[in-house]
Length: 319
Length: 281
Image (cartoon, rainbow over all chains, first blue to last red):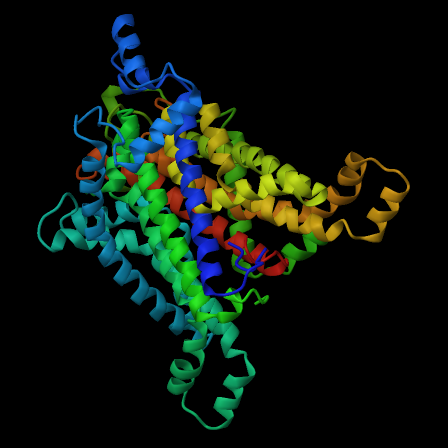
């Protein structure tokens, strides 16, 4: 996202206000997309009751949900309901969708926290190790692993982990939730791509920083490799550390959509995929709205933190 | 030709990757006329056979699944479906993105504002979520699936092509054409588009593995390509219930996806490193 475009007001508050407004507009756009998507592509009543209804029931429900009113009126009602947290009831479970999705999200969070820790630590470590001697054998091996982790789809990583550690070596449980051991495979599978992304990012920026004049100066002054890397290079390479954090959150969420199913982990990813399979539209639309909001808020925080770290951005000076 | 030169100077692993891609394309095209068995031909008398090297016979080199379908034939056919779907899809999405980028960059003004708002929105919301919505609202018809998969990166094409055409349209030959009274269509099609074409080709290579991966992930979950059509992801999903007894059913297509993804990524990274593509891609 461009951070330097179209800035007229300077100052911290203007900056925060502008970013927040943009995020709010995006949330509104998501709601608009979900709303009009469901209204334009079919009849939401038949969507909510796939098993079919009599004409009379259909008309009654159409009236009850206000679907005989104008599109604009309907959107207003939809927004009001959304603001009060009323997003409808799950078709398959007959509970409010908010309960269903939040319950699942809590399960994803249990994995996500560990995946976040693992992928940030592993990603940063691999990124540093791979940039010390870019032409060395260690770097090449690591970068190959990173390329693999980055390109191989998550569900393949998950299936291979299950086959090797679950069935062949029989070391770790591969299905469902149990003790701490049941977390290992899902967390590793969920961390592979985010860790690779972070490693790519750290390696890229470290290689750039290591080519700078002040690194040569530090080396010329006789400083050891460790001090040069940790004190001079890494700090500068990690000014955009917040980007990494934002990247991780988004990648873990997208990864969960495909990986939880493999491990039958009852998180938000499995919940949404089941909703697609069962055509449980209310659950799906709320899941989409909620996850989009998480991503939008994370991006907003990243933008704001950038402004804090790099004053040039909030003052509107081209970085 | 410059392309031949570039390939000749490439490191050996890139050459190996390119050779593998060529081999896959030949097999996939040849499979249109010849496959050992039909991809959906069932034979319950020889079901769940292991691959030849694990005690099965050479009748079915990669073994068979619970319905007795030949896994080699299914894998090749699935590869063809996956590659085909990704290729058509990416052209659709690329066309949309490039047209949006050209219009927004060359016309500017209101069109530019609208396109950039859509691009910003697309960047802010994970596309996978929108695909899930689309699959429920529009159904899992293969044409719908192809278009939705292809549109996955339209915003990246739009943004890169926009910034390229912004810098192209201030060139003197464009100004000369405009001064001579050339129509907008003429300028865009004769002066702007040919200059952005090389970038478009590199971007196609870069995004192809991502589309392939997305298709196999969706098919694996049962919400992509629908049975009985074989696709690689679908086959991994079908074999998931037999991981303990007949693990090869999932493993073969899984390894094919793994190798394809890795090879495509390696070639894409290499192409990116030898061309100067704008940062955001």
